[in-house]
Image (cartoon, rainbow, N blue to C red):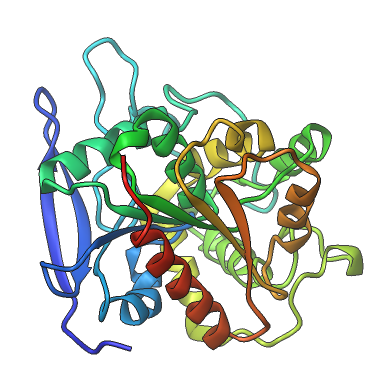
Length: 318
């Protein structure tokens, strides 16, 4: 465990439409580099315990995915493709309570992971990082997977958590209700909705299904953790679903199978997506993708994560 200071930075990316990406760093500059990619709708702040665990052996960099945390949304490109995040929904000026928010089902100008992969590549190049290790959880795992496929020579290795496998029918059913409209309402009903989403997220998957079959967690979650999650939703705003939805669409073994870089998939008993990650045992994954198992408890999980990173950092790079 390292108690070295965590520094916060911004880097300007893009040429025609410059934008800023926020990231945190911890650890000495001469150490091997690990880039951390967070789950949606969180930010790099959630990575602080992992940063503390790794930063005595690595230079750890945790970025805010574009449109989340303190990073700008991806900019509008000249041809009309790209993010256009501020234009994907019309403002809601209704005085009526948002009692039955509609799921956000309409397509956005970008619904895939490619713009996030491009942004990650720009970020890595802007910082001059040479073959960093990648860590990704949930949305972050899917961005890491696609980056490693697009730029295999630029990645030393990956550790993935919550890298799930959803069947097409259940994915469609989940997406029908998973992303309600959280645009501000004058009666504050959107805040109650987001609190409900944030609290149930830690106990049920999908969050809106409160049946016993959907229960994935039993421990009481501190109110501060729920509030931090709520703030992640509210900070991302009405477009919180963009990277989130794109990750859902990518979570299938066919996306993992082409990965050629050394990869560890970390699994532990209390993972919120455990049953969906366990399905990967039935997938025909290449030998460079290996499973790593942690016991219940955060300490063992972080220890296994660190051992995976140390192991991957010692593999021969391309």
